[in-house]
Length: 441
Image (cartoon, rainbow, N blue to C red; front, side, top):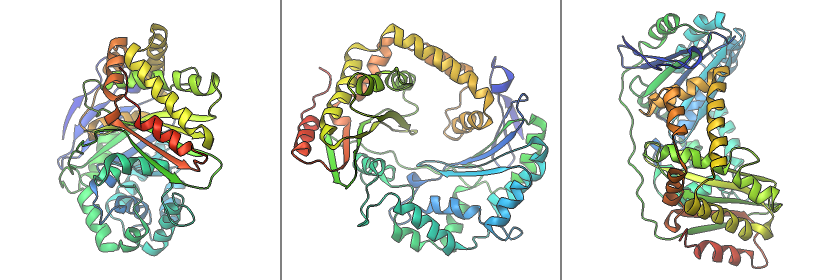
């Protein structure tokens, strides 16, 4: 086992130590001795990004199946009971390019619970597949209309942006996919993705380094080494704005105004982070003030960045009256134009810098956030100490933010999705806004 210090001058609640087991599994330990709960999480490179059209959805289905039992724990109920009697709470999530399994629990239960955790993650029995299949099929229905058509605006927007690349797939897959998954396929996927070289194990909260490393070696030291799973980078062939309108009977139209953005590793990524805080980091920021406070066009509006190791998407999401979709879209585009041409004000930057520092300090109260910060950085090979991360963001100036906005606010990066009832010419007005947009000039 090799170890190295990780956080320089960062105070103890955010400091991290990294280690590598003999099998290649990377371990991150971030003690937060002021807390009263411990947290353990396994992060792996798994998800729809690493699937094909044929097996799309298997990562998500496997996530459901892993907590359904081992040879010693014969059911999902037995697994949950085993952890809950120790005060623990199980969590699992499948994202586009990573999966997370975690437990938060009292520190006195850490030793026994981690032994269970290692068993559950490495030795799934794949019982009750048909029961879990029914649950996942119910989950898929949440994104479909009464006729089985996809009406989830986020799913539709990613398919529009990425086409046949796996970044355009849904995380859950389709009904036919889920009905085809059997024990053999699930075991193959588990053996491929839940390996030492493809994962990071993180400890945070009320845990000390020596205990964490001992537990990691004991419960995960036998994990097969495997290999780091990769996926081809998505290409870019878009030449002009794209629009997709999906009819759906609803009280509002779900609108997504998306820009193909920068990757997690792009040199402008810090400026992009600051840009997104200028756009949407509270009700005084540009997006909410422009659309809600000043004009009353929306009740629910937000902006977010989905970053990948080789690409990214910025999207503005809003629930909008059907007759206002074109107007709201025009206002969103105008906001990004202004930021590309003028950049943020000094007042905006001062507030952003303060909130970045405050939010980072607040991580000390959350073992889940600290584990995610360090594990995500290690998994995607972009690890940085929190102090360095904050310093990098605080150094960002107005010109860099303007440069980041200029890089993304371009017609050949724009994709718009509207899911609702655009009647009385609103579909044509929206088409005119999107197809006629020339970007900042």
